[in-house]
Image 1: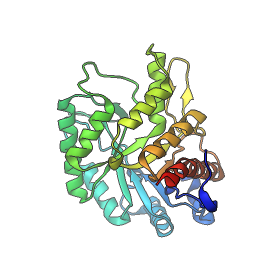
Image 2: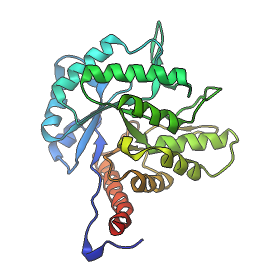
Image 3: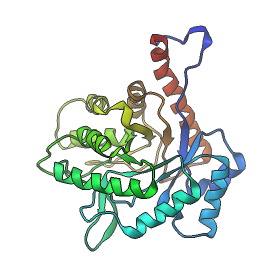
Image 4: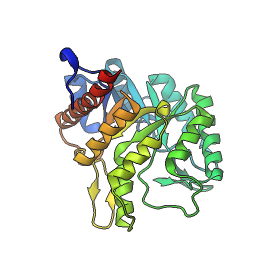
Length: 295
């Protein structure tokens, strides 16, 4: 790879980490050089209390991105009123740099589950998700970002592929996309375990190339675990080399998009996450250098 001319260091994306409970105190004490922190919205829905007080303190030091797991944007019964009310209040209190959730459903007529389940890739499901995204955005008075899933089940009778579904969602609603690079790779590995042929990395590159760069607001990087007959997106280890390679490709495709290191299980010391963030910055700079030279 050609080095930047005259020692110039190419611009890097904003880098952040998922701020989880084990690191509340350490991050506030150390105040490492991060561009933003991200928290799970639902952990701070309770009015007042210690959790919200900690988040307010974090917000004084860093921009905060709110990442949700419970809006159920793909639900045919719509968005839960209480959930949206709580999210709107939190957004008003914290003034986050981004608000995001998943292209999934977890809510039916009589139950609201914790699982992020995939929606059918058809026009009926797309219409339902567009309506829900529009409702959320109208209430929050801002665009949200919608994340691609690690999906362990598939619906029959797809009418489009996932990138086409997400591109159309963004075009119709004005929402942004949160591209989780690890999720794409996990899905490709599981497809291979089901007997699909072809190189998983090639499949992932084609997926990334099919997403319109103008829609992408953030990227996620995380670890995963092989469990024999399935690969699980557990956010419990360092990013693997294949995902770093895909991240390099994604940066070349989408540019210097804000990037988050996620780590939610077997959470290590804060320094490990900071090391992963530093590696992401280095990978992104290497990916962007040839683009700057060509400009």
